[in-house]
Image (tube, rainbow, N blue to C red):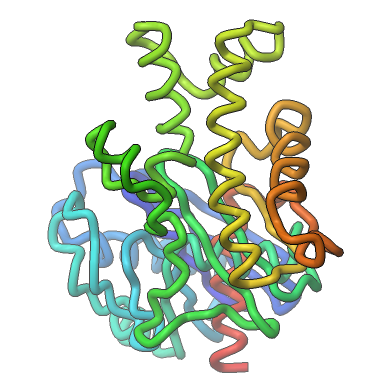
Length: 299
């Protein structure tokens, strides 16, 4: 049994996961008013969870927000919004607390590994996962293993430069995240309509009723998502791209046109066998991926 912890900015999820990726018990802890560093608060609750479940885990695996050096299990980069987080030695803290081998990796990489191990990416090689949300998360699986790079922080496809001239005109950096995230969709719709209160669900709902403005904005957004995917397909030649985030449930309005745009944009041989599918594990992906990562490390 592996104790898996998924550390986010506002909540921590816990699960006991077996070797096949099945979740046998789960718990969630809302991060409100804790007076110790984030990792310490997460571990204090982890101890309570393990005691409640009367289990002694054989290992601890952590999926965590931020740039995580997966070789050492250390937070080496953040957005600066979480106090006393950068520099946290997650793996070491887990091993000290539980006395068993531990590992840590970035949450988007963990989600990709989870979908490959037990979800929509199962048995695909190579596999890319792109999660469209407030930002763009991503992970790369090659040869049945997470591609980690030199410091264990590879796979940040959201930071891929997509536009230069347009970015300057819009006062943006031009990264894939700035054009492919759901935040980008909302920003574009607000610019067109002048509305101040909008979210992605509202835009898709309007498009579903045939609203021409929503459909046009959605089409432009899908163009930008496809443009990045076309580049990634030519770099990685993946068998499958898994799309995560709440919008991945939009088969007719997003996935169908996205498949068509990517197939049209790549060189013909790169389109052969290429699959673009929605993620299926939801919030469990990071927990299952962390367990998979632990098994790769410690068996």
